[in-house]
Length: 429
Image: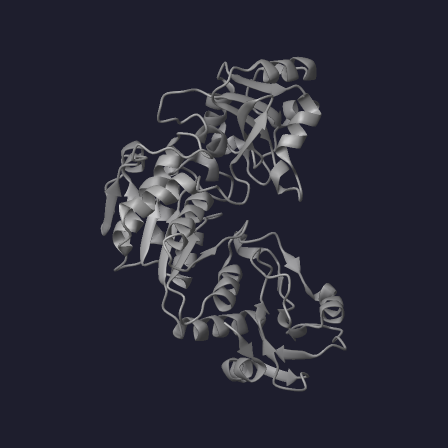
Protein backbone atom coordinates (compact mmCIF):
# COMPACT_ATOMS: atom_id res chain seq x y z
CA UNK A 1 0.00 0.00 0.00
CA UNK A 2 1.43 3.39 -1.01
CA UNK A 3 1.71 5.77 1.94
CA UNK A 4 2.49 9.48 2.17
CA UNK A 5 4.64 11.12 4.80
CA UNK A 6 1.72 12.99 6.36
CA UNK A 7 -0.25 9.73 6.59
CA UNK A 8 2.68 8.10 8.32
CA UNK A 9 3.00 10.99 10.76
CA UNK A 10 -0.71 10.88 11.54
CA UNK A 11 -0.50 7.15 12.22
CA UNK A 12 2.68 7.63 14.27
CA UNK A 13 1.04 10.26 16.46
CA UNK A 14 2.99 10.88 19.66
CA UNK A 15 5.89 8.73 18.47
CA UNK A 16 7.20 11.57 16.27
CA UNK A 17 10.11 13.55 17.75
CA UNK A 18 11.49 15.40 14.73
CA UNK A 19 10.52 15.80 11.06
CA UNK A 20 13.40 16.65 8.72
CA UNK A 21 11.56 15.73 5.50
CA UNK A 22 10.68 19.00 3.73
CA UNK A 23 7.44 18.05 1.93
CA UNK A 24 4.63 15.51 1.92
CA UNK A 25 6.38 12.80 -0.10
CA UNK A 26 4.77 9.62 -1.41
CA UNK A 27 6.49 6.31 -0.64
CA UNK A 28 6.07 3.21 -2.77
CA UNK A 29 7.80 1.06 -0.12
CA UNK A 30 8.16 1.13 3.66
CA UNK A 31 11.40 -0.75 4.27
CA UNK A 32 11.10 -2.06 7.82
CA UNK A 33 13.47 -4.96 7.12
CA UNK A 34 14.78 -6.50 3.92
CA UNK A 35 12.51 -9.06 2.25
CA UNK A 36 13.08 -10.95 -1.03
CA UNK A 37 10.03 -9.40 -2.71
CA UNK A 38 11.24 -5.81 -2.47
CA UNK A 39 11.25 -4.43 -6.05
CA UNK A 40 14.52 -3.32 -7.59
CA UNK A 41 13.09 -0.21 -9.27
CA UNK A 42 11.66 1.66 -6.28
CA UNK A 43 11.29 5.40 -6.81
CA UNK A 44 11.19 6.35 -3.16
CA UNK A 45 11.38 4.21 -0.05
CA UNK A 46 10.92 5.01 3.63
CA UNK A 47 13.94 3.23 5.10
CA UNK A 48 13.83 2.09 8.73
CA UNK A 49 17.21 2.13 10.47
CA UNK A 50 16.18 -1.10 12.18
CA UNK A 51 18.36 -2.87 14.72
CA UNK A 52 18.08 -6.01 16.82
CA UNK A 53 20.09 -7.59 19.62
CA UNK A 54 18.94 -11.06 18.59
CA UNK A 55 16.85 -11.62 21.70
CA UNK A 56 13.82 -13.88 21.35
CA UNK A 57 15.44 -16.22 18.83
CA UNK A 58 13.98 -14.55 15.74
CA UNK A 59 17.30 -13.43 14.28
CA UNK A 60 21.01 -13.35 15.02
CA UNK A 61 21.11 -9.62 15.66
CA UNK A 62 21.63 -6.89 13.08
CA UNK A 63 22.02 -3.11 12.83
CA UNK A 64 21.09 -1.02 9.78
CA UNK A 65 22.14 2.28 11.36
CA UNK A 66 25.80 2.31 10.24
CA UNK A 67 24.80 1.98 6.58
CA UNK A 68 21.77 4.30 6.70
CA UNK A 69 23.55 7.45 5.49
CA UNK A 70 24.93 5.55 2.51
CA UNK A 71 21.49 4.17 1.64
CA UNK A 72 20.01 7.67 1.75
CA UNK A 73 22.84 9.08 -0.38
CA UNK A 74 23.01 6.31 -2.98
CA UNK A 75 19.31 5.57 -3.36
CA UNK A 76 17.77 8.91 -2.46
CA UNK A 77 15.56 7.28 0.18
CA UNK A 78 14.26 9.01 3.29
CA UNK A 79 15.13 7.56 6.69
CA UNK A 80 13.15 6.88 9.83
CA UNK A 81 15.37 6.73 12.90
CA UNK A 82 15.10 6.30 16.64
CA UNK A 83 18.37 5.81 18.53
CA UNK A 84 21.30 7.28 16.59
CA UNK A 85 24.26 9.05 18.16
CA UNK A 86 25.33 10.74 14.94
CA UNK A 87 22.29 12.02 13.08
CA UNK A 88 22.66 11.75 9.29
CA UNK A 89 22.56 14.75 6.97
CA UNK A 90 19.83 12.98 4.98
CA UNK A 91 16.11 13.71 5.18
CA UNK A 92 14.64 11.77 8.07
CA UNK A 93 11.75 11.33 10.48
CA UNK A 94 12.84 10.71 14.08
CA UNK A 95 10.55 8.65 16.32
CA UNK A 96 10.77 7.31 19.84
CA UNK A 97 10.49 3.68 18.72
CA UNK A 98 10.86 2.05 15.31
CA UNK A 99 9.13 -1.10 16.58
CA UNK A 100 6.11 0.88 17.77
CA UNK A 101 5.90 2.78 14.48
CA UNK A 102 6.05 -0.46 12.48
CA UNK A 103 3.21 -1.93 14.57
CA UNK A 104 1.04 1.17 14.16
CA UNK A 105 1.57 1.23 10.39
CA UNK A 106 0.80 -2.48 10.19
CA UNK A 107 -2.39 -2.13 12.23
CA UNK A 108 -3.53 0.80 10.07
CA UNK A 109 -3.05 -1.15 6.83
CA UNK A 110 -4.68 -4.25 8.36
CA UNK A 111 -7.72 -2.15 9.23
CA UNK A 112 -8.05 -1.11 5.56
CA UNK A 113 -7.85 -4.65 4.13
CA UNK A 114 -9.37 -8.06 4.74
CA UNK A 115 -7.70 -10.84 2.73
CA UNK A 116 -8.36 -14.53 3.30
CA UNK A 117 -5.29 -15.78 5.17
CA UNK A 118 -4.01 -19.32 4.55
CA UNK A 119 -1.36 -20.54 7.00
CA UNK A 120 0.89 -23.59 6.77
CA UNK A 121 3.16 -24.93 9.49
CA UNK A 122 5.18 -28.11 9.95
CA UNK A 123 8.78 -29.25 10.09
CA UNK A 124 9.55 -29.82 6.41
CA UNK A 125 7.97 -28.67 3.15
CA UNK A 126 6.27 -25.46 4.31
CA UNK A 127 7.91 -23.22 1.73
CA UNK A 128 7.12 -25.48 -1.22
CA UNK A 129 3.55 -26.10 -0.04
CA UNK A 130 2.87 -22.38 0.33
CA UNK A 131 4.44 -21.74 -3.09
CA UNK A 132 2.09 -24.36 -4.56
CA UNK A 133 -0.93 -22.67 -2.96
CA UNK A 134 0.15 -19.38 -4.50
CA UNK A 135 0.46 -21.10 -7.89
CA UNK A 136 -2.90 -22.85 -7.52
CA UNK A 137 -4.79 -19.70 -6.59
CA UNK A 138 -3.00 -17.33 -8.99
CA UNK A 139 -3.33 -19.71 -11.95
CA UNK A 140 -7.06 -19.82 -11.22
CA UNK A 141 -7.32 -16.07 -11.80
CA UNK A 142 -7.26 -14.94 -8.15
CA UNK A 143 -4.49 -12.67 -6.90
CA UNK A 144 -2.55 -14.31 -4.06
CA UNK A 145 0.32 -12.78 -2.12
CA UNK A 146 2.86 -15.19 -0.69
CA UNK A 147 4.80 -14.12 2.38
CA UNK A 148 8.21 -15.78 2.34
CA UNK A 149 11.68 -15.25 3.77
CA UNK A 150 14.53 -17.45 4.99
CA UNK A 151 13.52 -16.48 8.53
CA UNK A 152 10.01 -15.05 8.66
CA UNK A 153 9.91 -12.73 11.69
CA UNK A 154 7.23 -10.34 13.00
CA UNK A 155 8.96 -7.30 11.42
CA UNK A 156 9.20 -9.27 8.17
CA UNK A 157 5.50 -10.14 8.24
CA UNK A 158 4.61 -6.50 8.87
CA UNK A 159 6.89 -5.41 6.03
CA UNK A 160 5.23 -7.89 3.65
CA UNK A 161 1.75 -6.80 4.65
CA UNK A 162 2.26 -3.03 4.61
CA UNK A 163 3.88 -3.07 1.18
CA UNK A 164 2.18 -5.92 -0.66
CA UNK A 165 -1.43 -5.95 0.55
CA UNK A 166 -4.07 -3.38 -0.35
CA UNK A 167 -7.85 -3.08 -0.06
CA UNK A 168 -8.42 -5.34 -3.09
CA UNK A 169 -6.00 -8.15 -2.14
CA UNK A 170 -8.16 -11.30 -1.83
CA UNK A 171 -5.71 -13.92 -0.51
CA UNK A 172 -2.47 -14.13 1.48
CA UNK A 173 -0.59 -17.43 1.88
CA UNK A 174 2.12 -17.72 4.50
CA UNK A 175 4.30 -20.26 6.28
CA UNK A 176 4.40 -20.10 10.07
CA UNK A 177 7.85 -21.15 11.26
CA UNK A 178 9.13 -21.94 14.74
CA UNK A 179 12.69 -21.51 15.95
CA UNK A 180 11.65 -21.61 19.60
CA UNK A 181 8.46 -22.60 21.38
CA UNK A 182 6.32 -19.44 21.14
CA UNK A 183 7.13 -18.34 17.59
CA UNK A 184 4.18 -19.92 15.77
CA UNK A 185 1.77 -18.56 18.39
CA UNK A 186 3.21 -15.05 18.02
CA UNK A 187 3.02 -15.13 14.22
CA UNK A 188 -0.55 -16.43 14.39
CA UNK A 189 -1.52 -13.64 16.76
CA UNK A 190 0.07 -11.07 14.45
CA UNK A 191 -1.57 -12.46 11.29
CA UNK A 192 -4.34 -14.94 12.23
CA UNK A 193 -5.06 -17.49 9.47
CA UNK A 194 -8.62 -18.10 8.33
CA UNK A 195 -7.54 -21.65 7.56
CA UNK A 196 -4.44 -23.37 8.96
CA UNK A 197 -2.58 -26.58 8.14
CA UNK A 198 -0.12 -28.66 10.16
CA UNK A 199 1.49 -30.92 7.57
CA UNK A 200 4.18 -32.90 9.45
CA UNK A 201 6.43 -33.08 12.52
CA UNK A 202 10.09 -34.19 12.50
CA UNK A 203 13.04 -34.16 14.90
CA UNK A 204 14.60 -31.24 13.03
CA UNK A 205 13.75 -28.63 15.68
CA UNK A 206 15.05 -30.60 18.67
CA UNK A 207 18.00 -28.47 19.75
CA UNK A 208 19.35 -27.08 23.04
CA UNK A 209 17.20 -24.15 24.15
CA UNK A 210 14.51 -25.03 21.63
CA UNK A 211 12.32 -28.16 21.64
CA UNK A 212 12.79 -31.34 23.66
CA UNK A 213 10.56 -33.77 21.72
CA UNK A 214 8.31 -34.10 18.69
CA UNK A 215 5.28 -33.82 20.98
CA UNK A 216 6.73 -30.54 22.24
CA UNK A 217 7.02 -29.35 18.64
CA UNK A 218 3.43 -30.44 17.98
CA UNK A 219 2.07 -28.47 20.94
CA UNK A 220 3.87 -25.40 19.65
CA UNK A 221 2.71 -25.71 16.07
CA UNK A 222 -1.00 -26.28 16.75
CA UNK A 223 -0.99 -22.68 18.00
CA UNK A 224 -1.07 -21.70 14.32
CA UNK A 225 -4.87 -21.98 14.41
CA UNK A 226 -6.64 -19.16 16.25
CA UNK A 227 -10.04 -19.78 17.80
CA UNK A 228 -12.86 -19.77 15.26
CA UNK A 229 -10.63 -20.59 12.28
CA UNK A 230 -10.49 -23.81 10.29
CA UNK A 231 -7.63 -26.17 11.09
CA UNK A 232 -6.43 -29.32 9.31
CA UNK A 233 -3.76 -31.64 10.73
CA UNK A 234 -2.13 -34.62 9.06
CA UNK A 235 -3.57 -37.81 10.61
CA UNK A 236 -0.14 -39.40 10.26
CA UNK A 237 1.23 -36.89 12.78
CA UNK A 238 -1.49 -37.72 15.30
CA UNK A 239 -0.93 -41.46 14.91
CA UNK A 240 2.86 -41.28 15.20
CA UNK A 241 2.82 -39.00 18.24
CA UNK A 242 -0.24 -40.67 19.79
CA UNK A 243 -1.87 -37.29 20.11
CA UNK A 244 -5.67 -36.85 20.08
CA UNK A 245 -7.26 -34.65 17.46
CA UNK A 246 -7.04 -31.13 18.93
CA UNK A 247 -10.34 -29.38 19.60
CA UNK A 248 -11.53 -27.41 16.59
CA UNK A 249 -9.27 -29.27 14.14
CA UNK A 250 -10.04 -31.77 11.36
CA UNK A 251 -7.71 -34.54 10.23
CA UNK A 252 -6.56 -35.34 6.69
CA UNK A 253 -4.78 -38.22 4.97
CA UNK A 254 -2.09 -37.16 2.49
CA UNK A 255 -2.50 -38.47 -1.08
CA UNK A 256 -1.52 -37.27 -4.53
CA UNK A 257 -4.74 -37.99 -6.37
CA UNK A 258 -2.93 -40.36 -8.73
CA UNK A 259 -1.28 -37.38 -10.42
CA UNK A 260 2.37 -36.82 -11.37
CA UNK A 261 4.52 -33.72 -11.36
CA UNK A 262 7.71 -33.76 -13.48
CA UNK A 263 9.60 -31.51 -11.05
CA UNK A 264 8.87 -33.39 -7.81
CA UNK A 265 9.38 -37.01 -6.72
CA UNK A 266 6.55 -39.19 -5.40
CA UNK A 267 7.14 -38.58 -1.70
CA UNK A 268 5.00 -37.83 1.33
CA UNK A 269 5.94 -34.15 0.97
CA UNK A 270 4.43 -34.10 -2.53
CA UNK A 271 1.31 -35.89 -1.26
CA UNK A 272 0.95 -33.40 1.61
CA UNK A 273 1.31 -30.50 -0.80
CA UNK A 274 -1.39 -31.87 -3.11
CA UNK A 275 -3.78 -32.63 -0.25
CA UNK A 276 -3.45 -29.15 1.24
CA UNK A 277 -4.14 -27.76 -2.23
CA UNK A 278 -7.22 -29.97 -2.59
CA UNK A 279 -8.64 -28.78 0.73
CA UNK A 280 -7.96 -25.13 -0.11
CA UNK A 281 -9.59 -25.57 -3.53
CA UNK A 282 -12.69 -27.00 -1.84
CA UNK A 283 -12.82 -24.17 0.69
CA UNK A 284 -12.55 -21.32 -1.83
CA UNK A 285 -14.60 -22.96 -4.58
CA UNK A 286 -12.00 -23.92 -7.19
CA UNK A 287 -12.91 -26.82 -9.52
CA UNK A 288 -10.85 -30.02 -9.48
CA UNK A 289 -9.73 -29.34 -13.05
CA UNK A 290 -7.83 -26.24 -11.87
CA UNK A 291 -6.27 -28.21 -9.01
CA UNK A 292 -5.14 -30.93 -11.41
CA UNK A 293 -3.63 -28.46 -13.87
CA UNK A 294 -1.92 -26.46 -11.11
CA UNK A 295 -0.34 -29.59 -9.63
CA UNK A 296 0.92 -30.88 -12.96
CA UNK A 297 2.44 -27.50 -13.93
CA UNK A 298 3.88 -26.41 -10.57
CA UNK A 299 7.63 -25.82 -10.30
CA UNK A 300 9.07 -25.56 -6.76
CA UNK A 301 10.35 -22.10 -5.86
CA UNK A 302 13.45 -20.78 -4.04
CA UNK A 303 15.48 -23.67 -5.50
CA UNK A 304 14.25 -26.01 -2.77
CA UNK A 305 13.85 -28.82 -5.33
CA UNK A 306 15.71 -28.69 -8.64
CA UNK A 307 15.39 -31.22 -11.43
CA UNK A 308 18.41 -31.32 -13.74
CA UNK A 309 20.05 -33.52 -16.36
CA UNK A 310 23.41 -35.23 -15.97
CA UNK A 311 24.78 -37.72 -18.48
CA UNK A 312 21.27 -38.15 -19.88
CA UNK A 313 19.77 -38.98 -16.48
CA UNK A 314 17.33 -36.93 -14.44
CA UNK A 315 18.75 -35.94 -11.06
CA UNK A 316 17.08 -34.04 -8.23
CA UNK A 317 19.55 -31.50 -6.88
CA UNK A 318 19.20 -30.76 -3.16
CA UNK A 319 21.14 -27.61 -2.30
CA UNK A 320 19.65 -26.69 1.08
CA UNK A 321 20.87 -27.64 4.56
CA UNK A 322 21.64 -31.24 5.53
CA UNK A 323 18.97 -31.40 8.22
CA UNK A 324 17.64 -34.87 8.93
CA UNK A 325 14.05 -33.98 8.08
CA UNK A 326 14.97 -32.60 4.68
CA UNK A 327 17.20 -35.52 3.72
CA UNK A 328 14.87 -38.22 5.05
CA UNK A 329 11.96 -36.68 3.11
CA UNK A 330 13.56 -37.93 -0.11
CA UNK A 331 13.32 -41.50 1.23
CA UNK A 332 9.65 -41.33 2.27
CA UNK A 333 8.29 -42.36 -1.09
CA UNK A 334 4.70 -43.27 -1.86
CA UNK A 335 5.71 -45.85 -4.47
CA UNK A 336 8.18 -47.78 -2.28
CA UNK A 337 11.29 -46.73 -4.20
CA UNK A 338 14.62 -45.95 -2.50
CA UNK A 339 16.75 -43.18 -3.98
CA UNK A 340 20.41 -43.16 -4.83
CA UNK A 341 21.72 -40.29 -2.70
CA UNK A 342 25.09 -38.77 -3.61
CA UNK A 343 26.32 -36.44 -0.88
CA UNK A 344 28.92 -33.94 -2.05
CA UNK A 345 28.94 -31.61 0.94
CA UNK A 346 27.35 -31.73 4.40
CA UNK A 347 26.41 -28.59 6.30
CA UNK A 348 23.81 -28.30 9.06
CA UNK A 349 24.03 -24.47 9.16
CA UNK A 350 22.59 -23.32 12.51
CA UNK A 351 20.93 -26.66 13.34
CA UNK A 352 22.37 -29.13 15.85
CA UNK A 353 22.52 -32.62 14.26
CA UNK A 354 22.38 -34.16 17.74
CA UNK A 355 18.66 -33.42 17.64
CA UNK A 356 18.02 -35.64 14.62
CA UNK A 357 20.66 -38.38 14.64
CA UNK A 358 17.95 -41.04 14.27
CA UNK A 359 16.96 -39.56 10.92
CA UNK A 360 20.59 -39.22 9.85
CA UNK A 361 21.20 -42.87 10.71
CA UNK A 362 18.33 -43.85 8.42
CA UNK A 363 19.61 -41.67 5.57
CA UNK A 364 23.29 -42.59 5.78
CA UNK A 365 22.60 -46.20 6.69
CA UNK A 366 21.06 -46.83 3.29
CA UNK A 367 23.21 -48.93 0.96
CA UNK A 368 22.31 -46.43 -1.77
CA UNK A 369 23.74 -43.41 0.07
CA UNK A 370 27.28 -42.43 -0.95
CA UNK A 371 29.30 -39.63 0.69
CA UNK A 372 32.28 -37.82 -0.81
CA UNK A 373 35.26 -38.44 1.48
CA UNK A 374 36.43 -35.04 2.68
CA UNK A 375 37.72 -33.92 6.06
CA UNK A 376 34.81 -31.48 6.41
CA UNK A 377 32.20 -34.16 5.71
CA UNK A 378 33.78 -36.57 8.20
CA UNK A 379 34.00 -33.84 10.83
CA UNK A 380 30.41 -32.65 10.39
CA UNK A 381 28.57 -35.95 10.07
CA UNK A 382 27.90 -37.52 13.50
CA UNK A 383 26.86 -40.96 12.17
CA UNK A 384 28.49 -43.75 10.18
CA UNK A 385 28.39 -43.45 6.41
CA UNK A 386 29.75 -44.95 3.19
CA UNK A 387 32.60 -42.54 2.35
CA UNK A 388 34.30 -42.87 -1.04
CA UNK A 389 37.14 -40.98 -2.71
CA UNK A 390 36.44 -38.48 -5.51
CA UNK A 391 37.32 -40.92 -8.30
CA UNK A 392 34.92 -43.58 -7.07
CA UNK A 393 32.25 -41.00 -6.21
CA UNK A 394 32.27 -39.67 -9.78
CA UNK A 395 32.31 -43.16 -11.25
CA UNK A 396 29.33 -44.28 -9.16
CA UNK A 397 27.41 -41.13 -10.07
CA UNK A 398 28.02 -41.64 -13.78
CA UNK A 399 27.11 -45.34 -13.58
CA UNK A 400 24.04 -44.94 -11.37
CA UNK A 401 21.04 -46.58 -13.06
CA UNK A 402 18.35 -44.30 -14.41
CA UNK A 403 15.58 -43.77 -11.92
CA UNK A 404 15.38 -41.94 -8.64
CA UNK A 405 18.68 -40.09 -8.01
CA UNK A 406 19.43 -37.21 -5.65
CA UNK A 407 22.57 -35.11 -5.44
CA UNK A 408 23.18 -33.15 -2.24
CA UNK A 409 25.57 -30.23 -1.91
CA UNK A 410 24.54 -28.32 1.20
CA UNK A 411 23.73 -24.61 0.81
CA UNK A 412 24.85 -24.58 -2.83
CA UNK A 413 21.59 -23.18 -4.16
CA UNK A 414 21.82 -20.23 -1.77
CA UNK A 415 24.79 -19.00 -3.78
CA UNK A 416 23.78 -16.34 -6.35
CA UNK A 417 23.95 -17.66 -9.89
CA UNK A 418 24.68 -21.25 -8.90
CA UNK A 419 23.91 -23.58 -11.84
CA UNK A 420 23.54 -27.22 -10.74
CA UNK A 421 23.77 -28.80 -14.20
CA UNK A 422 26.97 -26.90 -14.98
CA UNK A 423 28.38 -27.79 -11.57
CA UNK A 424 27.69 -31.51 -12.07
CA UNK A 425 29.17 -31.51 -15.55
CA UNK A 426 32.27 -29.54 -14.52
CA UNK A 427 32.83 -31.69 -11.43
CA UNK A 428 31.99 -35.19 -12.61
CA UNK A 429 31.30 -35.15 -16.35
